[in-house]
Image (cartoon, rainbow over all chains, first blue to last red; front, side, top):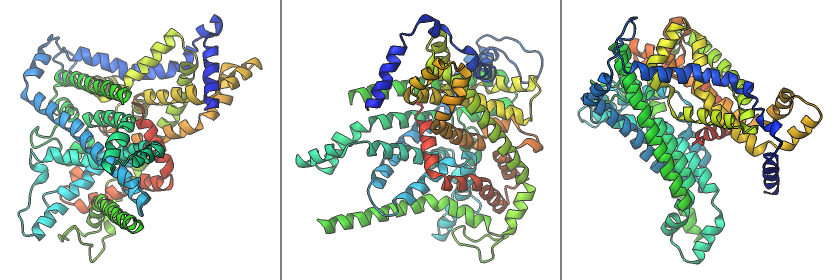
Length: 307
Length: 276
C-alpha cells in the first residue's frame, strides 16, 4: 500500500512538470496505431454512413443518393424488428442466464469441495474454442437426423423433434449454446469477486446470528457489485454481436426467424446485393450496441457507488 | 456439527460432479460421432463397436486442415506480434504525456473499442476490394490488428500508469537516455505480465476469428480453420462423422495449450474482459 501511495505522490508532483516536458506529446509513437485504426475502422465507419444514404448494390460503379429512403425502409421493414428483437434476446437473454448460472457455479465452486478445480476447468474450457465450432458441436446434439437429443426421444418412444428448425425454440437454443460457451467467464469473474470479500464480514454476521440467505443478501451480493457490472457489460456486448453460433446452428433460419443484426447484414449484402440497405442496418446495429452497452455501464456503475 | 458438514460437502461435491458431467456431454457426443462409420446409425450416446479412425484421416485430407492450420498460425502469430509492438509503443506516450492531444487520442481509442468493427462491414469490404487485398493473409492480419489495437492500448496504458514506477524513467533520462531507449530498455521489459495477457487474448480471438475471415478469406489457399470448417460442414451435410472428426482436430491445439497454460489463460482472458 505504501509503495502504491508513493508512486501516486510522485505522479502528482511530476504532473506539475515544467511546460517544455509536457508539451512534447511523442505523437509519432502512436502514429502507426492511429493510422491502422483510422484506415480500417474509422474510415469504413464514416464511409458506411455515406453508403447508408445511397441505393448502392455492392458492386456497380454508379449509384444514386436517395436521402433517408433506406432509413424509412428500415423502420417500416418488419424483418428489422424481428431481427432487433432476436438480437436483444441474444444479448439480454444470454446475459441473464450467464450471470445467474455463473454466480451459482461460483458460489458452489468457492467451497472447499472435491473435484472443484476439475469442474472449473471443464466449465471454462469452451471459452477458448471457436464459437463457430462450438455451434457445430451442439448441432450434433440438436440435429433432426441422427442428433443426440432425438436419439434419447426415440429411445423413450417419443416423437423426434426438429429443434433447430422450430422458429420459436431455436432462438432459445442459440441463447443456450452461447450461455453454455461463455458462462465460464462469468463464473471466473464472480469467483475472483467472492475471494476478495473479507471473511471478517461473515464472522461478524454469524455472531449477530445471520442466516446463510441473509449473509448472501446483505454481504455477498452488495460486495459483488463490481463483478456484476463487468459481467453484465461484457456479456451484453458479446451477445448483441452474436454471429458465429447462429451461422453454425440455424444459418439464421427458418426464413429470418433466428437472424441477428450481424447475420441479417451479411445476408443483405452478400445474398441480396442490397449494400446501401445493409450499411443502414449496420448503422442501426452500432447505435443499438452503443446505447445499450453505455446505459448498462452507467446504470451498474451508479449501483456500484450506492452499494 | 462436523458430521453435518461432511455430509453437506459430499452433497456439494456430487452436485459439482453432475455439473461437470453435463458440461462434458457435447464433447462426448462429438467424440462418439467422430468415431462411427458412415453407415452406423446407432444412438450417439453409445460408443461404436468398431472404431473408425479413418474419419480423421479422410477429414484431414478432404478439408485441407493442414493448409488451414498453416494459414491460421501465420495470421495469428504476425497479428499478435504487431499488436504487442504497435500497441505498447502507442500506449507509452498516452500513459505518460497527458497533453490535450494525447487525452483526445486516448479517448478516441476507447470509444472505438465499443463499436464492433463489423457494423461497418459493407464499406470495409469495399475498401478491401479497392486496395486489391481480397483473399490475402495480410488483410486478415490488418483487420485483426486494427480491431484489437484499442483493447491492447487500453490494457497497456492502465498497466503503465498503475505499476511502472516513474522514478526509473526519470533516472534514465537524467543519465541521458533517449525516449526510445527508455521505452525499449526499461519500460517494455517491465510490461511482461500485461504483454502475456494480451498475447493470450489476441491469440484466442484471432485463432478463432470467423467474422472477418468468412468475408475476406474465401479462396482455398488462404482459408483459416473456422472458414474451412464451415465450408466442410456445408459440403458434408450427410456425413456428420467426418465433420465431427474435423471439428475435434480443429479445436485440439487450442485445448491442449489451454490445459498446459490454464492459469495464464484464465488470468489473461479475464483481464481482457475487465476492459469495461
